[in-house]
Length: 405
Image (cartoon, rainbow, N blue to C red; front, side, top):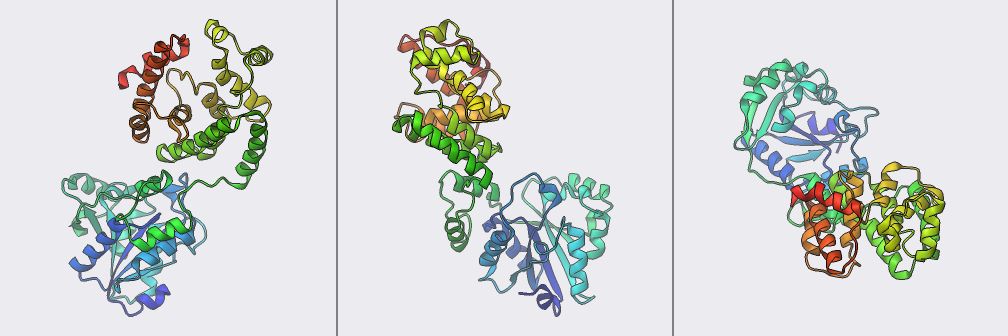
């Protein structure tokens, strides 16, 4: 529906903005509560265009976010959705949107702008925040235990009068769009967190599931062709599993999904090379053969793999190379991508079951350091029972992460 048609005869409406990626029951309950408590004629949902505070965050395509919002709002006659921001070129600011809406409705029309307490605590960083109350009444949606003094101080910094704001408690639905995206990416249920039609839309359009961009996909295709020539079928299945699990962990922990995918694909690129040839290639690429590697040359595959990833597969990114280089032994103070590949290698689906695997996997999606600590301990205990030497890096890693046990 055209925004102008919605507002031209409206006497009282509320605006609810957000990325809505995806919209969920928390948004809808908030809108319904404000609507009923303040006797609002219409709640105008406005999917954001290019919000300045989320420039470094991947946001789904505008049309997907708009359509999900429209689907969610369609069965409530008081709800409507506007394209005013997603159709506006360039950066989108709340004050500009409010100014445009003010021109569309009668001068006597009351406009309410709905914002959460968390956003209200950052309102001084918005574009010309002091103008907001000349355009609308601000509704701050709160939960029990919120700190009104902090909000009042923030309003003062923004040049706003907190006494003119409306504060409203809304049922504490602990739902977030971030959690929904993460749940989809790792195959967990999102039922009852958002409307069924929105859930179906997400699955139908494969939203929040990693799909490599064209450049990454082309690079991966070349890598896969080479790997198929050097890895056994079982090892290749494991490799694909690690790549996919790495992407899921990367999404949850805010790491680069492209790097996670490529590091996962290449982590075992040297694994199936015969041990004698491994040692020869290690000399060629300058990999030091210490006492442990001389006795257990198979362990050299992580160090050699990083060198082959660089020389043969054209990988120059240090994060990817380090994730390959330390994916078996670990090392002290690993980076996020290193931890991700180390753990994905530990429990990807094709791995044979072992006691503690599922517990470590569940932990990995909540706390990488704790998961690394438990997996290191499991690996070291297992190798000691098998009378295998423990590489010095593994011992140092265990000493570093032991505090997380």
